[in-house]
Amino acid sequence: MRHGMANKKLNRTSEHRKALLKNMLNSLIKYEQITTTLPKAKFLKPQADKIITLGKKETLQTTKMLMSKLQDITSANKVKKTLSKRYEARNGGYTRIIKAGFRYGDNAPMAVIEFVDRDVEAKRVDRKKKDPAKDKTEEKKLATA
Image 1 (tube, rainbow, N blue to C red):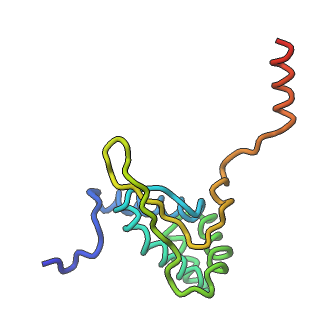
Image 2: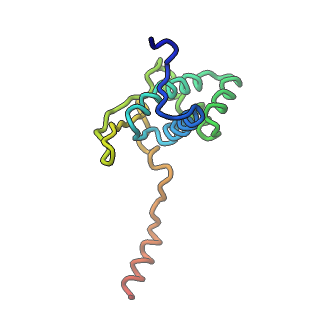
Image 3: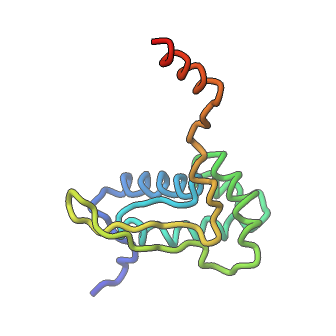
């Protein structure tokens, strides 16, 4: 019988699973779309929905609970200020899983998990903008050489 077997173990210890979940939640909140394996995406989806629902409540207790789950102030602030406002009219179903084929090395099923109505520019958070002045100086160096 399957009584009391609610979560997938993902072949990891409980500490590793907890750290994996926290890191994936922070990445999903930061970039609003991540690519991972299908079992990990299915493991992450209900937790992400619970985090957004928690962020919609405006109390000190929910802020502390967000901080304890995410352990990242920027992610917690984004949930409270941006994502909760975006989904205030929606009752659940904040994320979607899209199957994305199979990984080359081990043929593992891959999936993209993303927020519904996501901000497309959020994926470019860490990318450095090209500086046009720097490009011109490099062109001059190449031209003189």
